Image 1 (cartoon, rainbow, N blue to C red):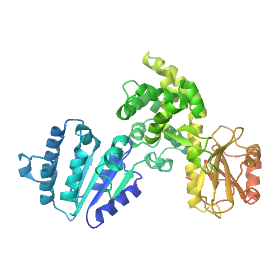
Image 2: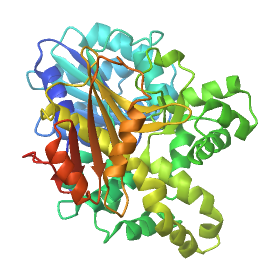
Image 3: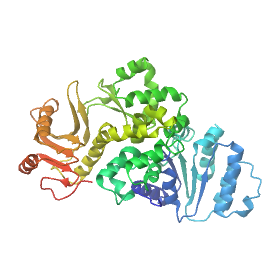
Image 4: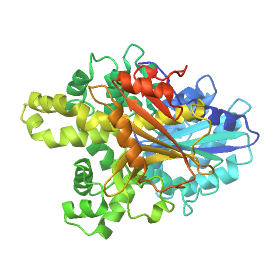
Length: 475
């Protein structure tokens, strides 16, 4: 595709580290396919730098490959045939010979070096402390195995703890940048593409030249030879041991069991046993634990629900995993029929809520209200659920919102229902100032649009943007 999109904040941070006086040690990590290498390639472009990609080979082979990379990229010819005795000699040779005011080196897939030799983080710590730290050097350690990268570079027990000058945990690309990948697609198409690819650059690339979302799914996910067919298994295999247990857990949550008690009952496991599995999946950015946004102590709340936050993983476990028998037996069209019939209602509509939440922050920055909220999320109790609740913690303003991704136009009854549900939310009752916002993909009835023009506490947003007199467009 040849496009480098978003990541301006991360690039600016790396640039800042490069320009700072003295040494810099930056950790870049995140899940696979999220664009870490592309970010670093963009950063070192047009700069004298050494880039080394570690592999799962043993320590000796990696060291030989590193020596060759340093010799070729830094122009140190004699190092090609030199019998360097250790990592420290290679680093010292590079430091003495490298040109440029600030010397730059990137070790990609750093965790493999520690996997091949558990002592390597200590080896690099010594190299940093005795050779690099007092020089004009920037070193970037990059890795994809989140748990291993954290244990080797970030946690207190790591030999490198306290050495880093900064870190970037690279996340998926937000929906608001999708039009840059697909400039000729409609907003509705962008929502569908985001609902399946989830902001992962590698997945987005695969969908770039397809005619529509269903063709993209059939070619890139349901085909047994396709890159994404077994992607969840590949991702988890790199991070965890009990693949079957994690698959069962994710499948259970994808089926709608979000409370800990329901998950435990479905899997016939004690809640205490599930805790470590859930913690691991949260750490991998696959799951998140949600509580009603008004909860004062989220960690202690008993109202927590577990949600699959990765759109692709959610799609795969909703539509691919349950239909593997059809796919494996050569009846892909049966799986496609189910996807065509249920994709919008059973998947895109839920992702649309997250997109609306993202747009709420954009509206916040664009002065859509005469205050700024600082907390946003969903709210629910045993009888009621509200898609969006946003509050100004230091003030009295609260916003209630609903997100409707359906074929019909949204009418006044949705607003009336939202106003009734808002009364169930206990937050500064009697002192608060209430506001309402409705997101509806296919727009609103004339009655509701007319009402919105009369009310200062109501905002309507559809595909066309604001529908009650505002002059700028969301998204």
